Image (cartoon, rainbow, N blue to C red):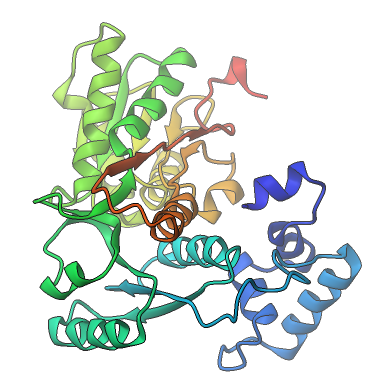
Length: 343
């Protein structure tokens, strides 16, 4: 169950607690989980706990006894965690799904070290874990360790070329199509695209979605409207200036939200008004998107849902090696609109 489900059932969400306390959802989670090693001030902790009390927030699962002894475990092996907020979101989703069945999630970060992966998998085999979720911070093809085949296993945000394991990744092409269609529906025709780093699957697939949507609308792909970026604000900033030096688009679709931040700044430097003279679309729906001015229209990466899918798959006992792609829906705010359509 995610925050949207809580809303429909009238429950206070963690997001509402974060807004009330003036902090991020991660900070709320750390405070509620008692992470004393995090450098969170006493005043911040006090504000979070006051917001919890004032709003009557109850964490999901609170007051529900675990089914069984609580000794059942799913192993979660991640190459990196600290480099992206999305790993934590996936882990939270799978942990919540597992706990519905009274199953714990034991998470390790390996840094891609094969020896460490093998040692952990040997431990989990001895512990007779329910299964193993093997995760990558980047959506990519992986070569899982041989010992993974001794476990009921699912690949999270990655896939193996041989198709030996069930896997789940975002439907990036469809996400790129959804973003571009939203711009087309807003009346834009000269839609520029700022790509991410070309070696990343996500960048290529988002561009493919952009091109598919344009072709479906009967438009020709114009190379002058496509620029290289780097998934960082600096890349979006520089690419926007290069675009405007040679052409004038109706809208700019940035392959992630961080590049959209740089795009906003470049447009302002050129005397443009985002969502009025030139529209902007992002991708990822990072927390910063809703705080930009105007709020950034973007595409949601379903990392929580992917984590939930993996845990449910392990607990179902189904070992069919399916390759799932979860939808990446558009989250429309104001930056993709023209002035006459502004809301």
